[in-house]
Length: 129
Image (cartoon, rainbow, N blue to C red; front, side):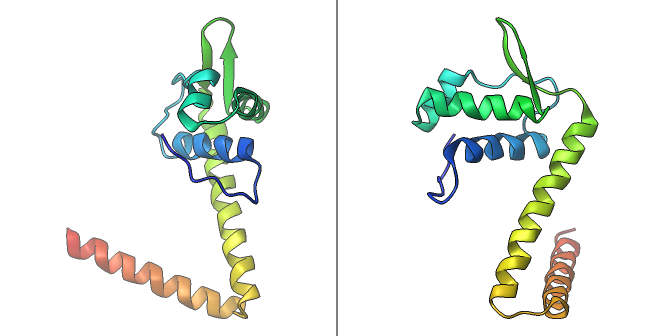
């Protein structure tokens, strides 16, 4: 388990986002136990307080829950996971659109490029079948 930390973002948020991605893509399914805070801190070579803050944030967001003496688990509420996945996607799309606007692209140009990219990927997936 490794993360390339972005120095412009808080580390605890990046750890939470790492787990959010794993939860969203099903790698950590509902009810799955997360590594302990201590294990996460050791694996990522961060301060245990930083890892703990990530876990607190995930629990506050309703994405995880803690069973006293047993650990932290992924929520079993599939609607929360669905909304998390949508929220992550929207956030990345917003970042991309903002970046492309800074480069001078219009919304129509962005749509054209995205449509072309998606059309190319559809062609790739048909070629693999």
